[in-house]
Amino acid sequence: MTINKRIMNLSAWLAVLAIICIPGTLHTEDGPLRTEYGFPIRFFTDYHIANSDGTIWFISGIHLNVLLYFFNVLFIYAGIHVILYIKKRLTRT
Image 1 (cartoon, rainbow, N blue to C red):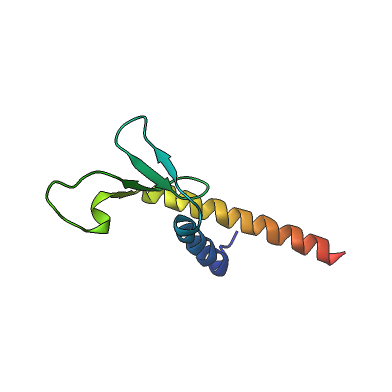
Image 2: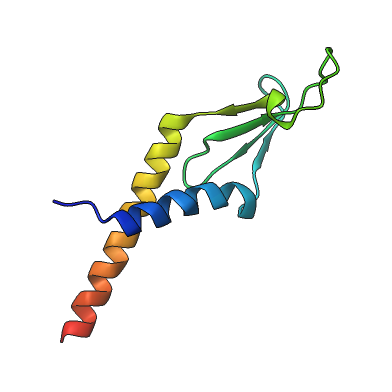
């Protein structure tokens, strides 16, 4: 089985754009106040904590789980592959 690089590139970009386009889930009950982003698996977490050292960097309160990001890319890649396979089967008849 060969990996289609165009579909892999598209799925990687779709996983990144899911952070911006799809609303996150706000968690308030267990642990610190945080918002989790990503689709279908949440891989980007933004912690809403007051920074005592006074930095204003955006990346100071985030957590990026790279392994879950790669799982998202693989899920999206498989979904695009299934859609293209069904499209090819339907148009071949």
